[in-house]
Image 1: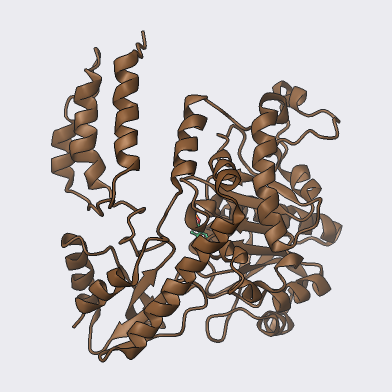
Image 2 (image 1 turned 60 degrees about the vertical axis):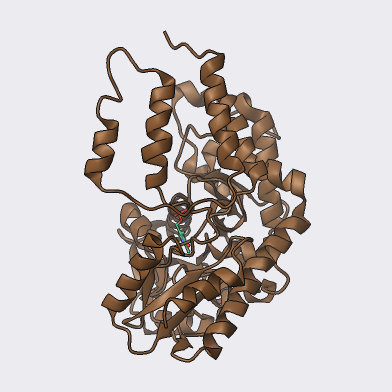
Amino acid sequence: MFLADERLISLIFEYCRDRLVLDPVPLDYSRDKATLDRALDGAITAAGNDPDQVMDVFSRVLAPAVVSCDSPRFLAFIPAAPTKAALLFDMVVSCSSMQGTSWLEAAGAVAAENQALRVIADAAGLPPEAGGCFVSGGSAGNLSALMVARETGRHRLGDAAPGRLRIAVSDQAHSSISKALSVLGVDALVVPTHEHRLTGPDLQAALRADPQPGNVVGVVATAGTTNAGIVDDLDGVGQVARERGMWFHVDGAYGGAALFAPSARHRFAGIERVDSLVVDPHKWLFAPFDCASLLYRNPNLARAVHTQEASYLDVIHTDAPDEWNPSDYAYHLTRRARGLPLWFSMAVHGLDAYRDAIETGLSVAREAASLIAARPGLSLVRPPDLSIVLFRRDGWTEADYDGWSQRLLADQIGFVTPTKWEGETVARLAFLHPETSLEIVEEILATMA
Ligand SMILES: *Cc1c(COP(=O)(O)O)cnc(C)c1O
C-alpha cells in the first residue's frame, strides 16, 4: 500500500543533505497564491504520483516560497539558527516515530529530554525538584503554566474565590499571554510600565490602587520582550508575588536563552524565584521548530492540574518514584519527543558552544547599535538590553519603512520588518544567528541613506 523503496529514501536523504550544506542559505521570499496553486494542481490524486515529481514541485516552487528563518540575513520577528546536529537529530526522531508522551512508552526519550530541561533549570537557578516538559511553543507554554497559576490560586482562595480570577500582566506582555488568559477565562490586571519595563514598585502600585487585589492570583513578567528585548525587574516582581502569595510566571520565550550568556546574566536576577518559566529553544537555543521548554518550581502543582483522567490512561499513572509523564505538565497528551534534538546537540557540542553562540548574537547587537548611533541620519531608540535593536531613520514615515523593508527582501539583502515604538514606526533588527555579521548589518544600513 505505502511503498517506501530505496529510491524514495535516497531522494529524501539527498534533499536533506543538500539543504543542510547550503552555504549561504538563500533568504527567499513568499510567492502569490496563483503560482502556488498552479504548482499544486493535481498533486494529490487517487492513484498517487512519482515521488521525484512531487519532490520537484516542493523543491522548485514550494520551498523557495518560504523565507528561510535560518538565513543570517533574516533579522525580522525572531530568527532561527538550529544547529546541524539538532536538525539531523530531528530526522532521527521523525524516522524513529519517537513519541514522548509517558514514561511507560518513552522512558529513554523522556529521561534525555529531562536532562536538557535540567540544564535550563540550572541556568535559571531552580531547585532540584523543578521540572516540566517541552511543548510546541511559548504560546503553549504560557497557556499551560497560567492554567496551573489559575487553579493554584483558586485552591488557595478556597471558598473566598470569586467567579473570575485575575492575573497581573504588563502592558508590554506578549500577545500570547492575553490570548491564554482569554482561553482560561481569567481577566488581566494590566500594569502600566515606565520605560516599557515592569518593576516590583509598578506591580505594587497597581495592586494598592486596585479595589480587589485579593483576586489577582498571579503575575507574568517578561524576560526579553519580543518587540524590544527588555527584561523586566524579575527580582522586584518576584518579591511582590511572594509577599502576596501570587504565582510568578516568567515568559522568557525569546530572551531566556541569554541566561547562558555571562555578559547578560545580571539582567535576570531574581529569575530563581519563578513558579513557572518558559524558554523557547526553537528561538535562541538553536533547536528546530517546534520546541519550547516549560518548567515549574513545584511540578506536583502542575501534575495536579494537567493529568488527564481517562480509564485507558490509568496504566501510565503508577506510583513508581521515577515515573515522569510529560503529558502531566501541559494541556497536551500525545507529543513528539521534541526536546531530543536539543538534547543531542547540547550533548555533542557542549554548553560552552551554546554560551559562545549566544554571546555572539549579543555582541553583534551591541556593535550594530554603535554603528547606528554613529551614522548620520540614524538614531537608536534605546541601547539594546539583549539582541534586539530598535532605531529610526530621520524623516521617514511608515510608508518609507514599509517600502524599504519590501525592497530589502526583493533584493535578498535582508528580511527586516518595521515595528512600533510609542506609536512611532521604527526599524527593528533581531539578532541571534551566530553567522549574522556586521558586514550584513552595514549592507542593510547602507540602503537607508
Ligand atoms: C515568541 C514569543 C512567544 C510565543 O512563542 P511561540 O513559540 O511563538 O508560541 C511568547 N512570548 C514571548 C516573549 C515571545 O518572544
